[in-house]
Image (cartoon, rainbow, N blue to C red):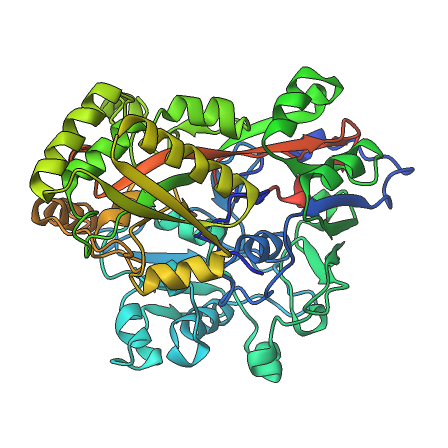
Length: 542
């Protein structure tokens, strides 16, 4: 079963993070030049088509063999890739004009051109493509109208003004658009793509690469696959490991056993394994990274019980989030203090983290929980109620649900919580139909900007399951997305939004997820930060 890129199952998902490796550190020797690096993935690739990939595994794989206008360097900073430089937008921050490098080539030896980017962008917004990730390009002029069938594909704000010159025009200024360019937008060669039509990206042979590696040994359902060095890549000399084998491993115990036997050199562990590793011999191999992901609870505003704000406040105060991350998760995850993950953005004036400025908006207080529960009882006219908590059926989510159930029933006398655990695809389907009281979900964002989390409580959110609607909140969201405020003013508006959604409990954050990886001491250049999985182009054998 494939997990949506955005909606995460919570078990062993390799997050999208930035790579902190330096090409200058490569110490590859002749004895290791041809040695294969073996790594694990928690699920198989669903598609190699960058226009269609909407799950974590596929996006992480695509980042290995595709490259966009920008990428990230060893410090996680956005740097030029196919584009020759980071451009400063004109036209009030709406128009980007890129000069492309002339030595960028596809793995078949053909040049990467501006037309390849235009084709890919037009294909992504074309309704016939049925892309689930049109949000990646929604800020481009006319994209939304094209997707809804109201305008012609050719009207998209992307055009080639020369073989190696590309212009992209947005509908408004977008502060985080450089992240889109570095992690989400890729070119496609029209002739190759159209040769296979809807079958493009369904196997390795029906996929064309322009990045450091070429996808190999993947037939569309394989649990293993390989990244082979792309000899046509413009920076091929800096790619030190020629072959990377990926093995899908469903259980963390198996992953750790493979690592300890040196059958794999990079893998992910969760839960109690992390605590054990920290205290044992694997501590030297362990790295824990906070992710741009937040685990939270949406509430069904269409139901009498859960649309009661005092009930939602009571539940939030009943949850000891510090105990949850310390005693249940044990994997480096951190208690949520706002609807925005720590590390997502800094105050443009002081440099302080967003959550330092908000303070802890989600404290644990049994006394306040009881106070708001009494208010809810009075307004509902009920002393006892039963709620159903809908959750994903993997072990991590089940444990979190049991924690929530126990905390509510302990602190809110008269509330009974029944947990319903189903596969993630079933959960999303049930949420979409509005057939729930409250639920647990994790949202992962591909770019660093609070709006992608704040809009989880907004009607502007394309996956607005809870249907929370607050006029004041919508006004703040509209200001944030308008592209007319200064950096400082926009930041202050986002602060206001974070505090308001906490006051109203439009959605209820629980914790910021973290990823714990084991990395062999024989390998260098494999590092993780907030946004992306490790890019193996920076890896090397020590």
